[in-house]
Image 1 (cartoon, rainbow, N blue to C red):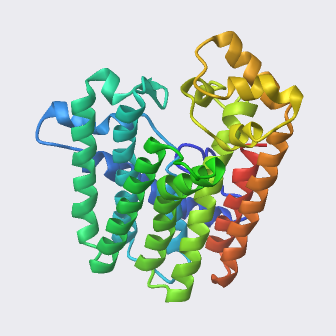
Image 2 (image 1 turned 135 degrees about the vertical axis):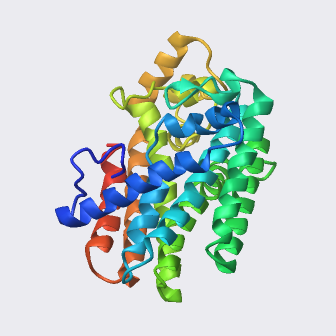
Length: 333
C-alpha cells in the first residue's frame, strides 16, 4: 500500500479513484523526501539521500495521508509536511541504528556506516533530524510538541534495547515495551499527524494514536515472524538469529521447559555465527508451537487495532486503515 508496493495503484477495500488520490500524494511526498535531503555539498547530499534512494515501505507517510482523508479537505501541503516529518525522522533513526548495530546492509544496499564511516552516518542522521524539526515548525506548536515527545520515546526505546532486560524484568514484556517505543510511537504519531492536519476532534485523534501504536507493534511483530518463517520475502531468513536479536517467536520459544526443546533454547541463548546452526535453529523454530503462538498474538493485536477505528468517520479512508489490519496478517502468514 505504498509507492513501492501498490503496483497497480489499488488499495484493498476502497475504490480506484481513492487509491489514485493516495498514490498521487505519496508520489509528491517521495520527491519531496529527496529534496529535503539536499545539502550544501554533493557529498552530504549523496549520503543524506542514500537510504531514501534505497526505497522502503513508506508506511508512515501512508498513514499520514489516509488519516488526513478522514476529514474534509486538508491542505495538501500540510499533509506533505506531516508525512515528511515522520519519514525523515524514521530514516534518520535508521542511520543511527545501523551504527549501533554495526550493520553492513540496509534495504539491500551497503549501509551508510559501511560505505563511509560511523561518524558520517551519525552526522547525516542528525542532519535529517534537523530537517524534520524545521518542517514540523511550519505545522504549529502542537505538532512540534508531539514530534518532541515522540523523539523522546524513540531514544528511550533505543536505550532500553541497548541495555537489555534488567534484573526483575520479564524479557518478553521488556521486548514489547521496546517495540512500542521504537516502532509504535512514530507510527502512532504518523496517524495522529494526519488527523491533526485534517482538524479532527480530540476523540478521533486519540483513536488514531491508539490505532497507530497498535498497528505499528503488529507490523514489527510480523517482521519477527517473517525472519523465521519465510523463504520468499526477499529477506534472508535468520537475520535476527545471527545477530542474537530477541524477537517474539524466539522469546516465546525460550520460555519452554520441555526436554525436547533443550537444544533450541541453547541455540537461542545468543548470536549464532555458524550457518549450519542457523539452519538448525530455523528448522526447530518452524516446527515449534511458538510460531503459532506468535501468529495468534499478531492476529489478536491486529483486531485490537481495528477496534480503535470504531470512533472514526465511515468512508474510504477508514476502510483503507482497516485493510491495513489484514495486510499485516497476510504478509507474515
